[in-house]
Length: 557
Image (cartoon, rainbow, N blue to C red):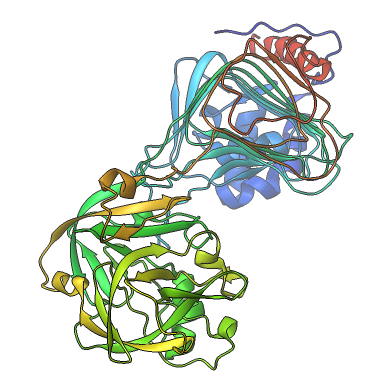
């Protein structure tokens, strides 16, 4: 689609200057930006002369030898605000960093062009990678201006197959107060997230325009009214589709007492930012047994402190640390389990001891990974573990915190009968029979790496929950994750994905209008009535008109 533009009050006319005046002006404004990239003064002058000699009101990537960052920064340090891409051309920007904008930027094509960002199969979890990649293309900061992509398809590079892919995002701005502006994406196919954007206040308008957009990806938008309800989202003729990443991988696994090795692949495939938060866990399921993949925070904040250890990392790519698999005859400590108010559960134990919560002096003790079906001895009495589960709710990770980080990650074990009331809060346990011990023969076994989010992973000697139960999870990603205080006007929009809503508690929405729209469900629940008619807000319609004539007058010369 090609947009034709008309405007009443064009406020961005550029005066034509003499060539020598343009060169001097450019040299003064952008020398500091370009010099570090180009090198010598002689090279800088050649660059300035080459660009200035065109005497045009737009630039092209070709003029900058396809250097994306240099071209964008040129627009931020000159009177030129249009970056024109050639029709039918695909531009590959393999390495990039987020560009800070302080003034207007319009990236356009007369009909259609494509920008592809990133290198294929980038490993986001590789701390030693020297490849320059960024989650965001543009940092708007406290910017109060206008930016638009028109007739440009935006594509992120091919991702590694993992539970939290490296999804790239177009815009982010500051959380500070007072920012305004207009941000638009028009006539675009994309798999990149539109933006993580924050309001400036209740009254300062930040207008977000999405028109003729086709999106297929993991996240689309996160609009936050942290400073009040000043964000106004305008959507027209958009088809937005959420694609779920995987939540599990089948692998060949080789166990040792304190770690598990992959025959192929990487534990990075299951790494995620939720790992280390209350209702999320990464586990292994093999031969009816579960093994937690503890995050590094567990080792640094819990294991190391009580065992005088120095573990710095849990995930080593091809292998991952696990809690110790016990053998017959091993003795160690476990704690009685208890309710939130501290009442003991008569028939239940925990493998991670919260010494502070129990009011007991800590002792050195290696946590064991027991299984449903294991047989143990306590004070000479034999017990069978009937049920193994994670501690339900956020207490699974959050009951014990250090340095502001979740550090607990306990399992809860239900025995075949009650413990005597005289048994203390912390007991010594001896292993009589360990199901996990059979895995220590160094033979590869089929198993699953599973990302469990808001899902339990119980094993039970009397109930076979089935493989589907164990593999079930909520995948990473939502289509929209917005504060209720924003405003929305949408027409002919298909919202095919989860709408997550929360609140900032600041300010108020200016209203919601949905005209011939589908898919605004799930948690979508505005606090004001939703209208089914009404004109596009004037801030958006005026800007579209402005773009029409502004771009037409500048690029068709």
